[in-house]
Image (cartoon, rainbow, N blue to C red; front, side, top):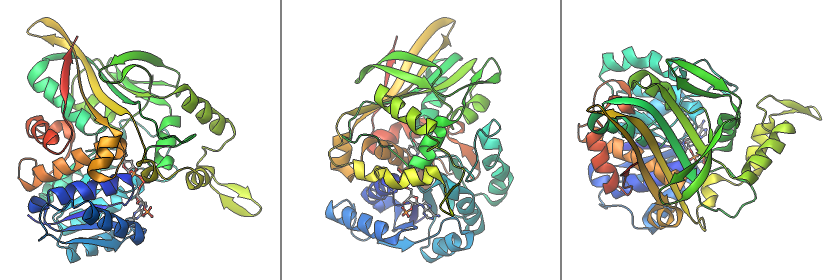
Length: 403
Ligand code: NDP
């Protein structure tokens, strides 16, 4: 197996390229492709400037690509002799990239669920709307596809599988909690693609409870949790990709996702929403159709630009309650990263870094045939042990705190 194609040149694509370079002895040549080729070229320069290529024998190249064009993706896979595609671009491109992988036989990895532009409050479980329809084709062609292998979704799914395999036999509840206690110094910014991020926050909160999906309005349910490393933080229940596979694959009475937001973030978010600036529906501006959310994206800071000077830490983990050998058990399995340390390693902030490390860990596990399962899966369907072993080697450690 040889050569990887990284799609996307944002914060995640950049951190992914750096991490691939640090392991290019196993992953081979690296091609970074995105809509704006200049961004890919800058990533190539930064990998070289940080001396992040483990072996200088591997090639590192940049390419312009419209990842919504299946034929163009397939041609690039063939031209670059790619075995594994790491899709770190916009989730609007996922299906075209999946199709190209199936045509060429390249293995497929992504970090976020597919979204058709304009999709909002989709039927549950979300993966059944698009991705799971490809399962038969992946299995028939023996191509491996791993869905949602960033941190959340991604590492947290592996955490749940690990707890189920080793720590708690009978799970009652899983609370996946994500707090960014960092400071980027901007008035308002999103840590990844604003179009994707703000839409997912605005949607109804959907979570799994007592064998069915519960639904409440956004930001209507909150709690305070005393996290390791970052202390007590207020988190809000929110709809999130991983619930839509975990509810199917890990038996539990309740599975819910919580994200930390500061009061100031919530205030600005509410004002933008009340003004209609989070809408994906075009409005007429002197004869020109303008999508407010796209306009907002254009004026907000580029997530990748937040990295220099970002301070503080993130903490992401799963609070799992249940029983083992008849005894009640409660634990928090988590990782924490420091923004400045991530920047020192790969020139990225911690949100991009925590997405890239699981993604590249999975690529290495496919290359080593440990996760090369020849079918389309969500992360918790895989053996968590090799992943839990490799992720710290790539830069993110994990711990278990017992209550
Ligand atoms: P950015 O918006 O910074 O980057 C997205 C990249 O995709 C850009 O380089 C953009 O192109 C590229 N792109 C968009 N459309 C196309 C297209 N048609 N063809 C080719 N390239 C395209 O986002 P991030 O890097 O911060 O995040 C990437 C994705 O990772 C997010 O959308 C999010 O869903 C996911 N994510 C997952 C997380 C997890 O833990 N699972 C956490 C954080 C993010 P261009 O070069 O023109 O800018």
